[in-house]
Image (cartoon, rainbow, N blue to C red; front, side, top):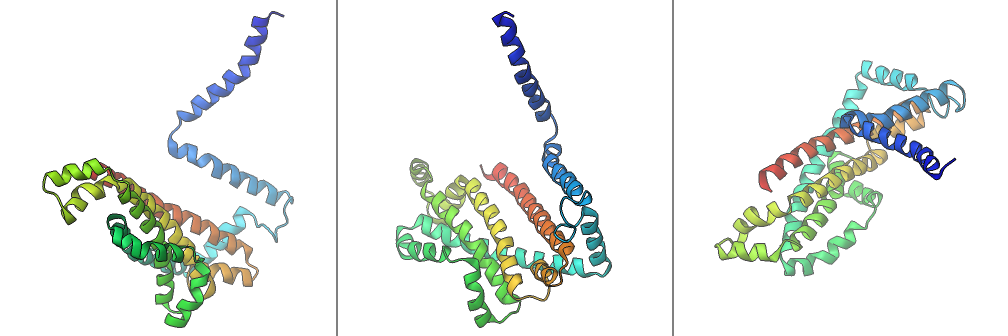
Amino acid sequence: MSSANQTQQASTPVQARESLGVKLLKLPHWLLALILPIIVLLTWQVVTTTGIVAPWSLPTPAAVVAAAGELLEGGELGKHVGISTQRVLLGFFFGSLLGLLFGALVGLSRLADALLGLSIGALRAVPSLAWVPLLILWMKMGEDSKVTLVIIGAFFPVFTTVALALRHVDRQLIEAARAFGLNGLKLLRTVQLPAVVPSVFSGLRLALAQAWLFLVAAELLGASMGLGYLLTDSQNNGRIDRLILTIILLAVFGKITDALLSVAERWAINRWT
């Protein structure tokens, strides 16, 4: 066999793989995104229905759907989702607002950076669960302590990204704006903030993810309602079907809120950059 034929045969599988990759890339993005979840769902169905995994350690997808129907019928699921979403949105809003304010202050002022940078950086390293006992002592086990914990979780990503982004805004751009008479809040609003819009939204998306994480930490240790409470209640009662349902709901609602924020990000980038 000639070397040319050998080369052609060897390249055929490579070309086939490349052709498959090109065909996949032509599919809509949403369809590509569904491939992995579908594979996971099918694998889950196979290993649970064939007995590879025991039902008491991993229920079937149908059992999880049945658990969702049971909670919906009793009206519990809507209450759990509603209260958790409310806590996340409130904590995310106030935490992000404080993060923007303090991030802008530290990013624009060397004095503020010297006074606040070290202390805020040290507080950022405190684990989420470490705040829970203190907040319970100060605010008891009501809504205030849970929302405050979410505020703490949302604050640090926004603060860090905004402060760093403002420090690295092009100095020549700022000097050119000052030459045209822009200073103070007008300079911040018209030049500096538009320059860091992508970084701000990166921080906001991280903050939103942190808000969901800190919410679960708050509800795991002191709640009578919410998705975190549903996790612990399902564990205590041996309802692994509800436990897996709750994990799926956290993933779904976390992604939904992130997708809504990405829509706002695209609008802001088109508007200000």
